[in-house]
Image 1 (cartoon, rainbow, N blue to C red):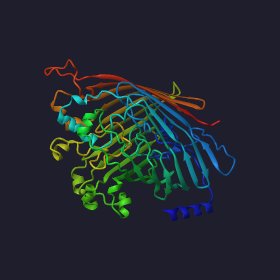
Image 2: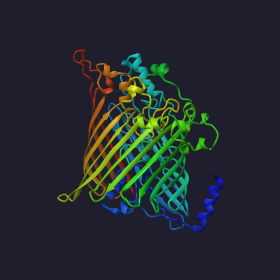
Image 3: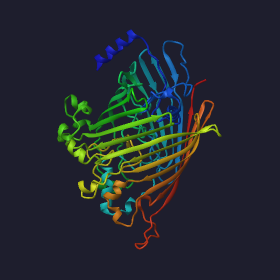
Image 4: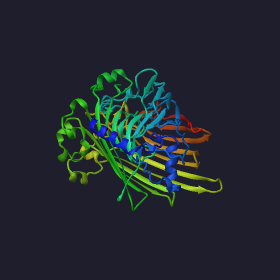
Length: 547
């Protein structure tokens, strides 16, 4: 690695400096959505696939500050962002750079500088999360012993604590920072920034900005690499993942009896993403991702130990012994179709974990251990208001398929997305790296909004079915308790005031059969679930140094 970096350094000194555009952190409020929207109305931006994020910012979308240095060293100030969230009664919300799923008040700060000298890029953009970290009622102590064991089954196959310790949480981090060496469309270096793989708007099966970013080495493209076949984008990473160290539930007596403590070791992560835009179909983007993780103390020697993403896909080709050694794999494929003539886009992502024994088994049971995302964006001109109507939606399905009744005797719960019996889940510091809505949870989101540039006013409808895999594994369907479903209505407002950009959301959540609890007035003859109504209020303030 040292020799490669020296050669890269000497080569770039010879060819001189390349251009630097300012990057937008993964799922950055307003700007990333505006970039996506601009692809449907302006072919200037269609070369960006949005399948590999962060993306480089375009001054035509927002006039970023030019370099504040007249020397050969380019220095740019990053936008300053503060996101503040207030939730009542119970947790709600995801995709927030490591803000925790917890009721009460919490706030997020980030900002910094981007420096470039010749081929060297340095982004220093630390972040800070401060959370009230309140406790909340779950009713876990009302469950039977077998139901509690089934609940802890998921706590012990992942790192999804109900509460992150006691008292206020103050969490500083390197945040959206990186040091890379760049040539043309490629760069190599180290980073702690969040990455996002795939076409999803609200969720991603592999990497999103739901959890805090993790330290990793990266070799990636910074823009589409053009060839005679079309454009390619790729990223290969080697990362270090940590567990939170917090027990699963808020009941110490239950934790001491049912919770399996963490090993204390860190997990090695190897991941690969590749996307392709055919030259002959400019609006079509397809690709795949593959990830492996494993506790470091159980790693073998050899090249494929550090590059397992290039090993065989099936267990027959890869080896059953790797499963026993604690290696955890996820694979996904995705596609995105952008149609500027109709001002619309459609996309999907399909993932599978617990890789098949062989290709015959995959063909017979492709839905085993799967998750998927479907989504769209549609724009309509509204000449009377000189605006556009934006309709966008997405559904994320993590619940196990019905083949669990055959494979696991009707209980299910063996291969829920982002969980693993030995590697303890595809997580970082207690939060999933990809889908942040909850273990075995499904969600459907639909938005209607009027947009003009960066300004937006709209409404959001959301239906979230909580922890469906637990519900059926614990066989709660055979009791008086019904599924726990959240129905919510949100009001959206984004507005640009000079250099200040405001993005806000007020969401009311009505939980039916909250935590699968029964209402005190419930009777065996007339069962009635307990309902709860809460709210989420969130505002992001973004200041740009463009004047």
